[in-house]
Length: 208
Image 1 (cartoon, helix red, strand yellow):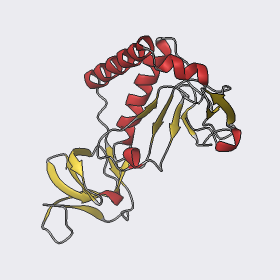
Image 2: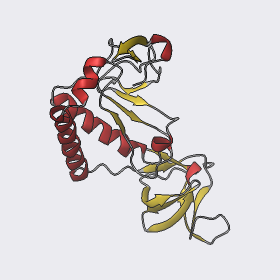
Image 3: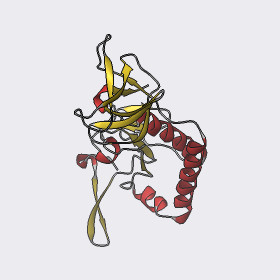
């Protein structure tokens, strides 16, 4: 829910102490630029946000930097409730497009009840389904460019994810339009550039 502990208020319910904060409500979406497929993640997050808003839902501002109540993380898209979250491994380390959806602020007592209803869950499920369909039908495949390579040098493309393996081609220091073919390890990505296909160290790639 993102609300800091010092802002939670005690509440006695059925003999047990709980904590609540009723001043914030709404969904939020989270992405990480550290994800190797960040542009695709952001594209899907925007499509999903549009579907949720079209369904009549509103996003929460509890996480934004100017709000002392929440996590104070930067907006990526302030018009759609999309935030940057780099500390979440599921977003930053996943080797595929990754978006985290928080469907509501569950420390809001009214919203907790709404989120648990089949009707609300149906709205969320429908929005996700529509967003996935639109994303898959669109041309949202991200491309990458070479970075951290001197102007007169080139990026070596290897036959496998190891600097000791043979070079199958090179990409110029200003190379663009590079595509991730399959998956990335912690350090290496399998890429395709023109007719060249092989592995490069991911520190030399940046999304366009």
